[in-house]
Image (cartoon, rainbow, N blue to C red; front, side, top):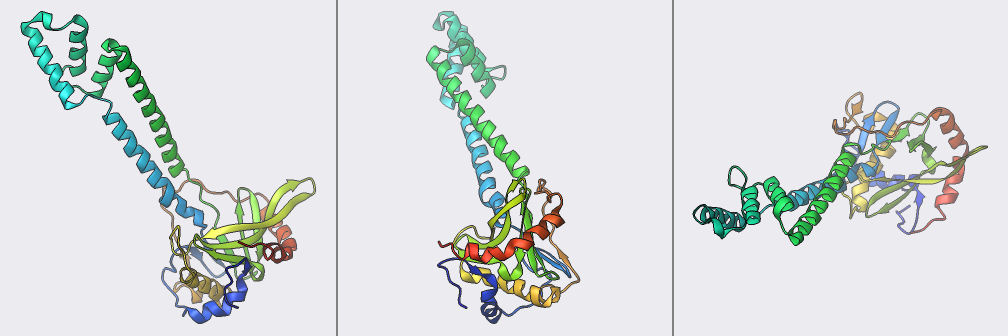
Length: 304
């Protein structure tokens, strides 16, 4: 079966196409997004993993750079400093050249080293500046506080960005499972759905939706995978290698994917927060698998 981009289809239906298109070779490193390979499990990370590097880091850098620019613009420019120095020099010979308020303003602005730092300028405006000058400075300081707060918040978000649970392909049981925010999702490999789009490869599992007195309600749950590491404009060929590796692993085992006895990709130490595995996971997984035969009927009705 050729891949149909008009909707969602069973992944196993393109197995022959993928294996005919790609010559499978075992690697020392099977390439991202594959994170773990052993006798039983092949684990793939969620595409949301990329959001931290593609979105959050640029946002953090952008806000910090804008903050430094705004802060640097708070102080006096070189012309103002030069003007203040010349006025103080003239004041030494002619005390009537400046009022007491202007003298205190210029002297405070220049500071002890006569170079006028930002804090010196803020102090001078606050103590001796005009009302309009004070209002403008207060508005400037308010913008700085807002930018600083946002910059710190985004940086904290970057450091505490939650690692979403991997998608685990279990060759022994021929199932796929994962969890997200305390909810279990799983299905038999033969029932997993897929859709290719510019964002990447979207996989559809059967998962817990809402907890009730009688247990959970269930629905189809989608997970984004980005084999090419690109956020946009992914194409069919970007997904082909990963799909072929999945099919080969589920059929033939780890030797079809890796050369060694096992493979584990370590994440940078900056990744701190993890999506915790739900309690009673095994029992809830079994309960989900009892119902997952309903999954194809759910996703085959959906269209782009």
